Figure 1: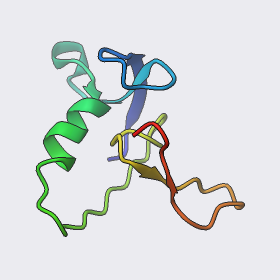
Figure 2: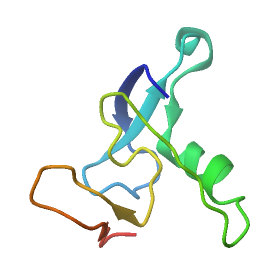
Figure 3: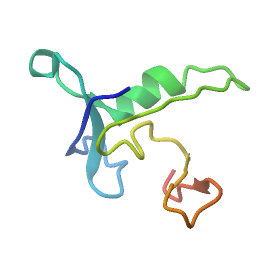
Length: 87
């Protein structure tokens, strides 16, 4: 995905910072933003065990937009993925 990303107030209390990360599609004014909770529920969780997906997000607030249990911080200091403590 390459486009706009955003944040909306967390709806279910699962976000440490109080905000859901979102993708903002072209039709967002009519159909709303796509929340990280929805991406996890409809894209990630249905995958069978052992499936590998490569997902590139080129948008603001995309670091945790899939709500995965781990993350990679590309800041020059980290060389491995880190487990998200709150997952």
